[in-house]
Length: 254
Image (cartoon, rainbow, N blue to C red; front, top):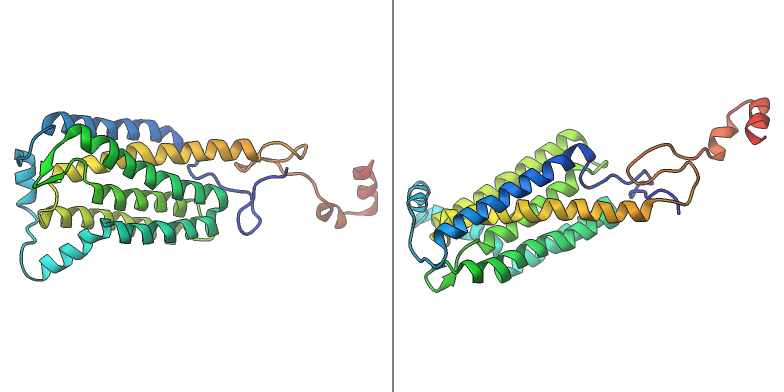
């Protein structure tokens, strides 16, 4: 088996480059800490805390154009838009990052959403109205797709560094806007949104690292002196020998 390659035949790029992998653990632990602190504080409650009241008062979206825009942005976390966004993400991830991209696009957002909706919400049992509120399922859905998309985009050789930066910045703004709209429309408490972000950073980047690890195992081996998908020396092929002098070719062949 030769080295893994991207869609243009170049060596496959890890989803999470080695220098960034050292940040995955501390960032993930910080996300866990955020979830644990808020979960313990608001478990079994149905009231607005001091933090929630202060933050929610900053972004009222009860009337007029702001209410319409806020509702539309909040609805991005509904099942149908989420399904569409995940399908688009999977297609783009496969086109740009092949198997690694498709794997993280399918697994990471789903794992984050399951963690929020099927694990944490029933355990924490914080409610708003008649609905379980903590962590915010809408925020988890949108943010997990966005963070996964950012991981896919940041390592895409098909895009320039400037374009990658602009796209990732735009994705970050989208998450903030959706979170603000969920609070402004009174759908979630601010701490529900922050808890959801904690879930996302604790789940999505580690899954990307795991996908890389499995992909690297599959990329190894086959060609002596070859390379795994993460780089390294590649084997000398005929194209390198064609342009050399006959005597050099003879030495190389012998």
